Length: 285
Image 1 (cartoon, rainbow, N blue to C red):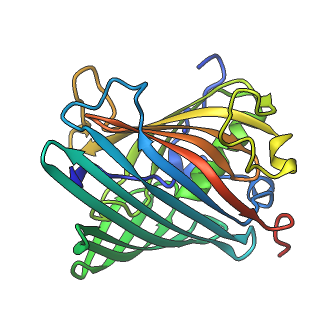
Image 2: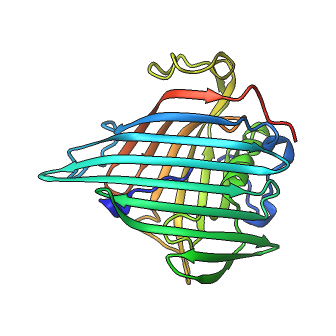
C-alpha cells in the first residue's frame, strides 16, 4: 500500500486543446489571479467508489499551501498523512513536499520525503529547467543524476492552462506534465475534462461552513484529470488504456480547489475541506 499513495498537487467536445505541452503556455492573467492560501482537508476512504479491495479503512489529513505571485513565482508545500488498515496490517504513510515554480514556467525546484510507519522510506530532491522542447532534470537525492526528458508543463502552469481553457468554454485539455513526484525522472501524459461552470455550494454540506464568502459565491468548474505513464514505445496501457491515477475536484479561477477525490488502482480517497486561510487577494508583483 505504501507505494500507491500519490498526490498531484492537484484535471470533450468540439473545442479541444491538442497542443504539445511546451506550447500550452499558461496565460499571465490566470496566474496573476492566483491567491495565496492554506487549505486543510480530512481524508477518508471513498465508499461511493468501488475500488477498495482488501482495504478496510483509510483516514488522514492533507494540508496544502500556495504562496507567491505571477512575477516572482509560486511556492507550494503540502503534507499528506494517511493511515491504512487492511486485515491485521496498518500502514502510516506521510508524504511531505515543497516546490518552487518560476512564474514563466521555465524552472521548477522540488523536494519530497516519504515516511512509512515513521521511518524515512524515500527522499527526492532536484530541479528541472525547460528549454524549448527539452526538459533537463538534475537530481541531488537519492543520488546525483541528470536526465533529459520531453518538454512538459509544471504543476501551476498546468493548473492555469486548465483554468484558461475553462474560462474560454473549452472542455478538454491534453498536456505532458512534470511534478517531481515518485523518482523525479518521469513526465506524465494527462487528460483533463472540464464540466460546465457553476456557482454556489448548494451541492455540498461539510465544506459550506468553512468557505470564505468570496469563494462560496464564486464561479467554479468540475474537473477530472487522468494520469498516464509514458514508456519508450509510447503511453503505457493498462486494460483499455486506463490511467494509473486520476483525481477530480471543484476548481476556482483563483487556484483554489475543494471536494477532492483521488482514484488509485485498487481504492479511492475523498478529501473534504475543513479549514482554509486566504490572503486578501492576489499578491502584487
